[in-house]
Length: 42
Length: 298
Image (cartoon, rainbow over all chains, first blue to last red; front, side, top):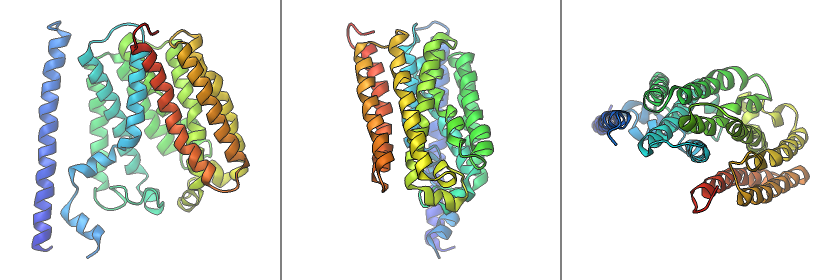
């Protein structure tokens, strides 16, 4: 594995981590909003 | 070092996982599910409607990911699918399976908790049907694979309808039947001009097993059956005269495509019919939605 491969691997891993982070934040926001709606808050 | 080796060494991107969800297939699934919600009697909070659409999209995508995991051996030998994330070595099979299963379970649970459990149950049924009945059981065993397996793709309007009404009614069954009958001519049109691919992979599609002439006759038969079923939403009162006229005109064009395929000697009419079949279904459901949202509509 060359240095370029290692750097590319890091870059892709970082991208995947950000995607998982965004999905988790989205899920938290979704559950919050759904709870408010189901409780009759809107 | 080859491209594939580089990809294996460097790992998958987030985009590779998105590709596992078959976004292009997902778009039509989402649209028909959305249409089911729009035409259903009753009211659903806009946020919950968005959640329902999201769950339908994620559920469909998850089914696609599991399908790609199971079919990775035949995908590798077919030109159309060889560049998918698993056969090209960008995503490990185990990762794809875990990704698909987690998303499928999440979609059903969120649908049940946020919307209702009737819609969640149909979503679970659609996913299980696509994975176990179509992908694992039928696809490699019978030329009727996409006829029976096509039911999986016909569930979305029923899910959308159930999200609003909490149940299954005749109009939602008719929307299911519409997509069910549309699937064979749509898929066989593709199989006609990709029959070499399917033969090489050992998938017993109708053109491979019975030949192109039988396939073309079957396509015309299903297309003729589709025309009255496509008009049926008008009979049960969920569509107006604009939809009726549109469905008949589009149906006539679809039948004309099937006749051209039957008469044609080369792949061109089949390619055109495949393209038109997607447009046909999109326009049909767009008419259905359009009539409901325009002022003074159904």
